Length: 176
Image (tube, rainbow, N blue to C red; front, side, top):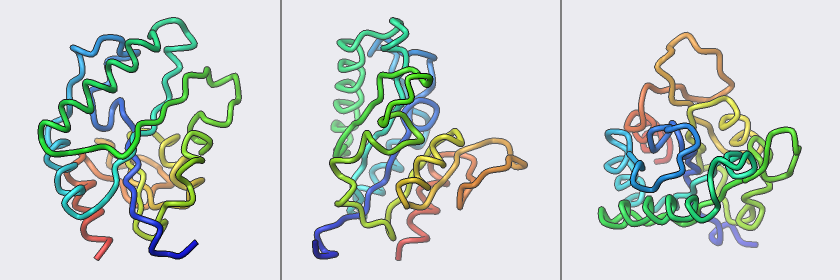
């Protein structure tokens, strides 16, 4: 496959990264974006990044979130972002419990195997709020950004930032 068949992708954790973590969110009416996320996503789309949400959703296996509601939540996210001119390329989720040791649960990369060959790894990033997101990005071979208010946090991420807009600035400054 030729290099020009690949494109830069920003992989985004969902809860705690782009939307407020409501702990097993099961109601689409409770979708709440963090300040700056929509503006940041718009900047990334303007620079031709594809946006992909990757999220562990063990609440499904735990019986706390219905697959129907998860789909409605994702539809709500798509609708809100679309109203601002931001289109997501894909949303991937893992419904399994950690102890199931499946191939699709972050930090493993099975949930994105269908697009793995499309990633321009030199220009792609993973943004998340947990070390498991960083590990996912490392396993995928892309640069990693951890969002954390703890400036002393020990992380394997290439970049540790305080919020989403700072993450976007890091991406824009590192992909000239």
